[in-house]
Image (cartoon, rainbow, N blue to C red):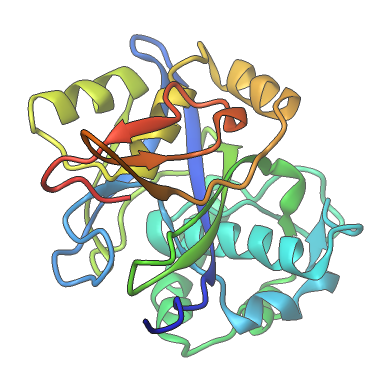
Length: 263
């Protein structure tokens, strides 16, 4: 048997807001059908951690004591949020408030350039005199793709409150549609087949559904111990079961594998 693929560092962000009718909502995007991972699925914005994410330590606030891998992950989450949904958790150097919606609009054209690698993150931050607001991120979960999968990711999930005047919109490249949705509506959509949601996303939506507001979600995540989740297949007499650590705190820790179920 061949050796399992090495997991690629990745970061995902659950951008949250309080809606006056729906309560807690999270921003989700529909992956392009030609993307080789979770194509067509409703997911949280995110992606691979880039090499350039490690180059901006002097342009970050709130991650000074973080180890290199954790720091790059936080930077990657903020960068991906900007590239994929247009929200930028950053401040102008020397200011305490996040960039305004008006300032954000003037930075819109950088999204595509960053995504294509036409400009590095360091160049962008230096040119625009910006500091990434890593202090706005709350660790939420940590998932590692199982060894039997051809593409593997070591993914950190973060929560963040979306600035009120930042308008979220999908990039039109990696994601082709987007929606602000309550956790309950997302889960209902999987039941009636309105949405396709992969296993890790579904369990994290279920965990998010336990919170009543952005503030409550952040508090609950801060109080919880983040346990790395590496799903494994366990063979039993009545079939194969997908198992995850019970101490990770999800609603289930095992699920019988049916046709079409993937970790």
